[in-house]
Length: 111
Image 1 (cartoon, helix red, strand yellow):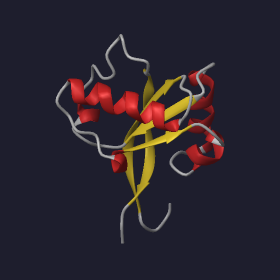
Image 2 (cartoon, rainbow, N blue to C red):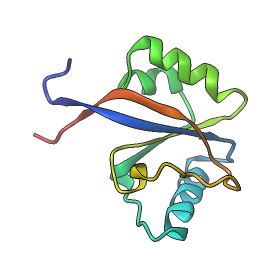
Image 3 (cartoon, rainbow, N blue to C red):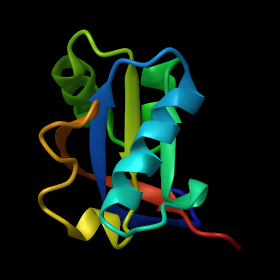
Image 4 (tube, one colour):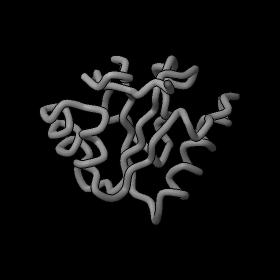
């Protein structure tokens, strides 16, 4: 385990977007609809080098599960523990994002 990392449950979403900004905008818009302001520090939107980027947060077996579960979607959004991740019905069914799952991972704490 990395020295400044803490174990957390990370919510993983997937969708298809033209770029990272569009994915973050969709995620933020869905959160705002239910009265939650999503800060950029509460998420990581991944479109390229996903296996490498996911490996920063998850064990290899979990990275493989996420990659398989995302299917044809080109974007993965990670939600770190926040008021938004406490809502079991997020994202809503009509969202451009879909829930892939919640996985045990590591999150670096500021030193």
